[in-house]
Image (cartoon, rainbow, N blue to C red; front, side, top):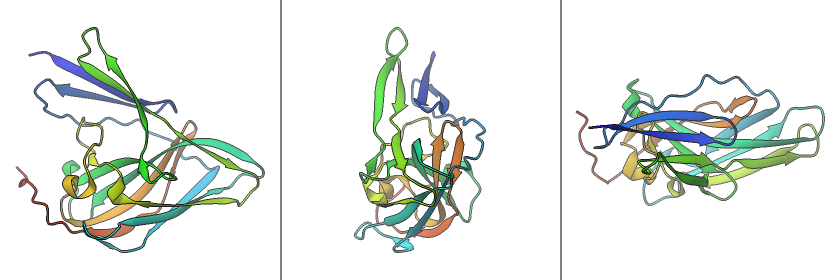
Length: 202
């Protein structure tokens, strides 16, 4: 059986090349090695360290301008959850997010290949505008309102938090991708608790 090629690319120039078998066997997501963007700083904190389906999983934070003057920058925000007890790739999750709309990061989808056997997904970045050094933009999102998926998966995130993420202790971080590099927050510890059953690990 032939393979299909799925390419997920942002207009920031951040490209992920994914190979998936037609019957849905997922392969590892390949990421470019990125440099650090020193023009901005991002920080996050959580309202409650325990996340449950019945209570909002608020993530608060800010993005700060570190340049000497005004700044206009396009960013692609992604939240990552990494298990604190396992280093396995299947225990790492990601979720592209629109920080200021409390929704998944919008995407543009186009068929890929002569027969449309794949999909090209172009993430639409967010524009941030700062007038002076030290100016910061605050945000608050609910992690239940965005879509998650395992990093190892070749599927663009489409599951709700408690359907995608297995219960456990995690490090949460925010990465803002830009043309000139990434801005990454420090880790924040969270515990995911869910009543939704998950299939046992193989």
